[in-house]
Length: 393
Image 1 (cartoon, one colour):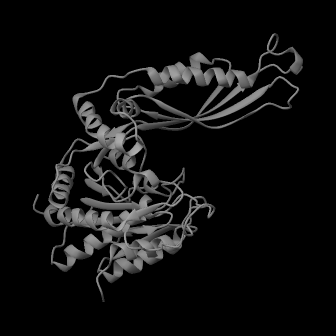
Image 2: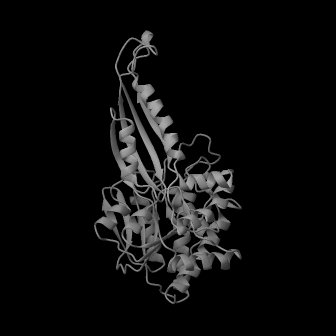
Image 3: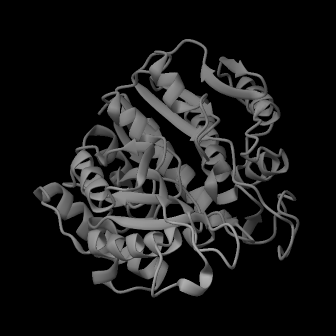
């Protein structure tokens, strides 16, 4: 049978819908299992309803190649091509998940086929998982918690800057806060009255104070943040100083807020869902304590909490950097990201984890998401370098 082509494989994966919610991955996992069988990899499926994960059948738990196959939803409005068309043109593959991260999964499998055909059998396992895009309960965290996966090292094909493999990510704290005011006639406010909505507004001003705080960093953290600022500032069209601030400070986003009973009533209740990304050096229990002390009359519920993680550069990081330099002819430097991924669960289990993959980061989760074919093939070549040299490193 013909060799796999990264662009075509990415296209086929995009055509198989796997939006989260609801997070059903049974169809895309069935396709991937067939693809793995085609290149000589034995796998097994773990399933919970229509949520499926694909793992190597005989796990060695040395070096894991990993990717998630669920994607964020996409409304067809404003897309140039339908979001699940998987259309291929001269330079890119179009569609939801091309960058995040079915393109990376395709490049991983193509690289693995290449080295196997060359007679190299690296001691690697694969894991294609569900429940990364959201707070699902059957993805990587479950697989590690149940003891299915305990790798020493892991390469995740998440999209990253071309010259900067990611070895760390900020933590995350998600809060649900309920503010309680005193109901009264709207005509009395603001001379008299205690509005729950204004309490929420005042608290968001306090969040800006939290954002201004600085935290102690060890030398490695300072180094990788410095390495990342150039690519991040270029990607977001912001200054290097702003990029460094994004990585080294607590960021906050009021993702959802609702409150009030009627337009002519002083609001008795207001609820806020807040997403905070936590830098290295920030003590999370202390931070949550500061927040609770600032709004003692409000109820603060912690929905999600995970500290920042960082893998000290090791075997896999060095191989990825070497591979990048061999493909691009430029020096690669490890960096970090402000976003979260499955890497944190693997690091907590003791693995060295590196994220490196193809994709247009400016289109992450966006309308007209696509992946340049050049990036797919270059990442595949980097993976081939890593897999070819892993056994001898």
